[in-house]
Length: 81
Image 1 (cartoon, rainbow, N blue to C red):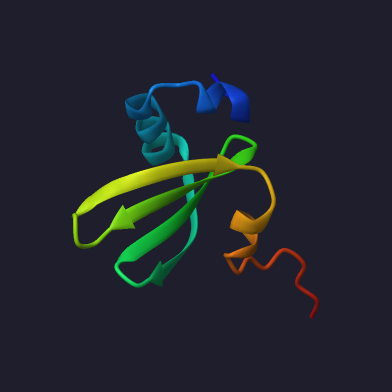
Image 2: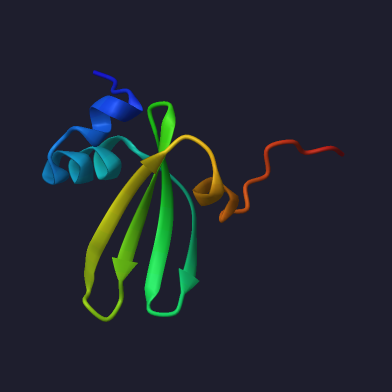
């Protein structure tokens, strides 16, 4: 089964986590202070996972399709040789 962004956002937190880590594809990550941010591609949208190093746990998931969150990651989409 596939989900739209809206359907995903309406799921319980446990279900969202399960989908990201079983169906999502890791794209990129960056580290800022004591947090690690990882982006996954899931269905036709992206999910950013915020992990706190000091708390040793995931503190937030944010699903999105475009915008400022996507701009945080360096993704090569158009290579010219």
